Length: 611
Ligand code: G6P
Image (tube, protein in one colour):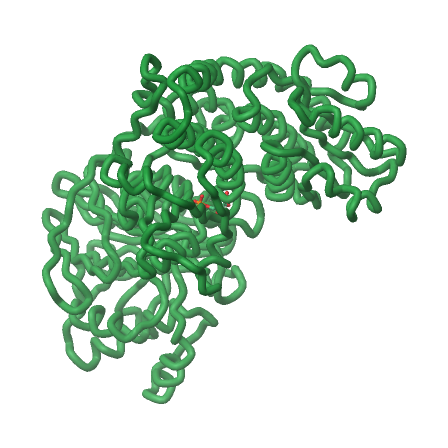
């Protein structure tokens, strides 16, 4: 969602805020702003619609001597993205400035109350209401810390906030409920950020604020209390990744870099987890729930977006290899539909960010109903990772491109390992385990071979950049890949695309096929190969353009396709990891050809922390 950064220390604050916002821009990018206190304790607020670069140009011309401030990059929830609605917000006589992620649900009622009390409001946003609400408490109690606490206690909804104020010029305040926020601990300087990417350049020591905590941060110290004024005992985490992992490293876009990282990230997801001799898998994070997993009668995956597609592949994998029934649920549906759950159920959240509001709520709901909860998460220390009973990190490193790529294949790596682990607890033989694991070890090299065809895929992309619609079809393990391929294209190129199980085409989408419709078939040499060839013929008969993702050496399919992109042979369980790579590249190159902003597609956010 939106990005927050804050600093208090001895360095000039403006470049730190701008640099931090640039690193957070992938979280939201319709407007950006900063508020800083200068050395005479004057508050300066500079904000504008547009990208962080636009803001950077403005602030460069206004050198402000300051060592304390806050910044924000926004993804609009209330109010159109314009200069006025951009953050930070201030009260009417600018005694405090505040940035906010999340949604204040009772802001209308608070707004009415504030107007009645004579306060003025000039924007349409819930954030301004919160700012003025805090001010109204300050007017009553004369203490900023207490005012923030009292206001937050009455607020309904979600927030991650940061505040600076001339009333206490040596204090940075941060608080959270629902929206992630961390404190970066430096040497005689401290930071606030919604994600470690903004502070990693300065410090690796961070504290993840918990829900309903407020932190009062000064240059050399900090205090954390709960909103009901109890002291908290924070835990300090060490961030493991490097600065270069959040930089483009010579690639034109983060998305392209992340696509090309997949041989490495896939290997990282498997690292230390493959016990080849035993034909088994070690997933240390699941040790506390090993008994429960052994007895499990059913697993339920819950997720959103690309992670939901990974869950669908997980369903095929676990049902095939471990013979445990699996259900896959959209988190937003699961949480609200009174699911039937018992203490024997295991609910597994899959989430790159570990912060997606619906996925988190689904896990909380499952917990409430007595189920065991697990997380398959990328971001270390994220809320889902912390709130689940146990879990497995996918170790993909920071994913900056809004359209998920490497996190998807790393999720598939972990799901494959999980399926083998569960299988070996049941009927799967050590020999079968070894065969599967040997093939998993060969996957990174096979991904590499596909990446070498980037130029060919770019060439195909060129020919379809003006298409209005796309259809993606696959069967079995490759049905979720069809969904993922269509999602990638929609997200970054704004071409309408649908994914379908290939056989379902006859029940509707076939009506759309004419000579203008490109149809992507994911058709590896597996037991359903002949069936999918028939589906290709059905499209051909109606003049559709056929792009096939096929197993290398398959010349038959090339005869009936307009374009064929080959992937190396693998076991059917692992084809999605390979077949998705050409689809990521196809979407990428089409979007680039259309002049779209690949890393920051319109209207999307990397991590959706509102419902
Ligand atoms: C957003 C992102 C998607 C992502 C989805 C779920 O929509 O744009 O790329 O798949 O959220 O995010 P999560 O962090 O829970 O995997």
